[in-house]
Amino acid sequence: MTTPPPGLRERKKRATREALREAALRLAVERGPDRVRVEDIAEAAGVSPRTYNNYFASREQAIVSAVTADREARIAAAVAARPAGVRLADAVTEAVVEQYTNTGEREHRALLLITTRTALRDAFLDTTAGIELPLTAVIAERLGNAEAHPARVLAASVTAAVRIALEGWLRPAGSAEAAGSLAVGGLLVPSGSLADQLRAALAPLAPAFDAAEQGGQR
Picture 1 (cartoon, rainbow, N blue to C red):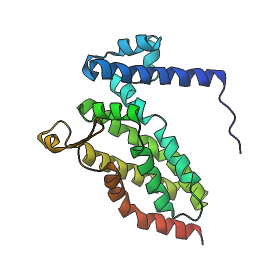
Picture 2: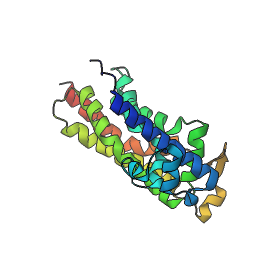
Picture 3: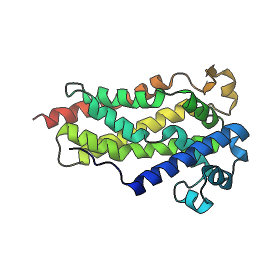
Picture 4: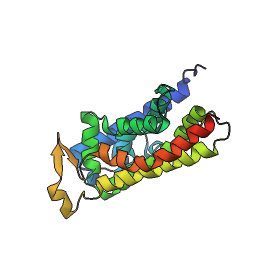
């Protein structure tokens, strides 16, 4: 089934959201996150503060959105794109790792800010909640299960595992432990490899995914 292209209103909303998050990141990099106001972001994006509040609840949310935008949809799409013969647990794990670690220079700048500010780290962690609904839909489709309950449980477990992995990865930032952290290309890596953290957090879910797949094949 082909998804119809978005209408003019939806395209304008997407453009406004993108302009706001890009302005938020640029100003945060230039001035430092603590010196950026909502009014500054709105002015830079050419909208009113009231319009800004229709899209983001805080400056931290806007800054974080520059690196996390549409990630939940990309994770679900990556799982759906895996061949049917690929184990579901592997498909989900690789999709999550790919979308959280395949970053460019722009994302590195945002992540550098995120790892050094408590409010930004909290906003970054909160974005994991968005994974659940789109992942529920794609898991249910893979399982051939009209009832979404098992898929929702699995997707919620993935969401929790991802948050735990990110908490472990970000924990040393801003503390004495950060002194021994590794800097790669300007990106502070607080606690080693994020890919390894994600895989370790998701590994315990594999038996549940396997059981759900086997049940769906009966």
